[in-house]
Image 1 (tube, one colour):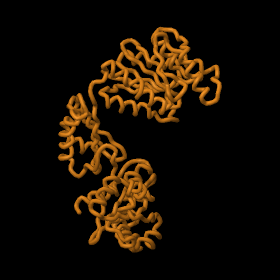
Image 2 (spheres, rainbow, N blue to C red):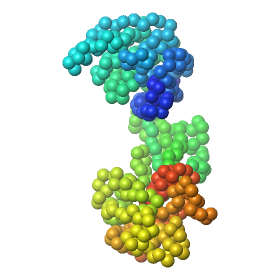
Image 3 (cartoon, one colour):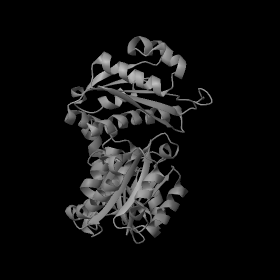
Image 4 (cartoon, rainbow, N blue to C red):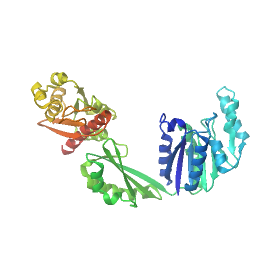
Length: 413
């Protein structure tokens, strides 16, 4: 048994707005053992809405709809549901009264146009909206249960939690608990990671293990189903342990943890301080670190030295090193890190130089080439990588690479 989520609005299909409602609903359904099989997004078009509702009713047991319940002419959900169900729209006096009372509480008179929000497909039940004027619609469409809710997020959240989810569970549609555990890795490509986990990511494996990629971070998602959360976690835990064992230091965190969180935790545990010297990243490494609460306990600050003159004057990079190796080089990256550590008096310092693009710096320095330098008391090192992508992609990935270099060093300390 699967659910379908339908988001309605030309502002979504045009790309002006992001559909966050579907993401939120999918997570809430999964927490209650309801699996989402489809996300559908439709513009404000009556025939398209009718077709989408009919298709959903043939393949899904539960259909959740957001949007199209307002009072304007492009709000078509009520009409489309009535046509799809082969019934007329009927007026509900109680719903109209509640809408009038909501306007009255704001010291306003309900416009005549808002009466349309009290129209429902015959046989449908209004869903009370405590936070807005648009009531929801609860009805059957073929063998499917339909709940249409407002597109305004805070109205939809409350309506789903308080009035829709309890009804779905009372019908016995929830099947236990679906737990998602996300294991985050950095430092290897998607194919390399999957080679190590091929038996776990195959189709039909229980629990399901999927791979997603975002800005060079490879995440393994474990989906475990059980009668209770504890039971589901007992299924997921051994798989997480296997993933950690096989991937080792590639794993840096779980769920919403990012590389900066891992670095800050390790800095505090090791009682070390960090500074940054940034070229192509332009302060992005420092920005990521300072998003972590309490980062001031270990991150001292940094120097953005984009121009060669600043690399020399602020970080002490010898001009002859820049002339001999070029500014995008391992030698300059290490010299920047070493100078930063000494001048800002930190235990560790990391640097980043590279070619952000879109053009190449030379035949041996294409766009995407990045060098990260690391300095500590008694030594320096460097790491290099070359990415394909936009200028923004390369800068973000270079910042992540710098954080990962620090993380790996701290694991050795």
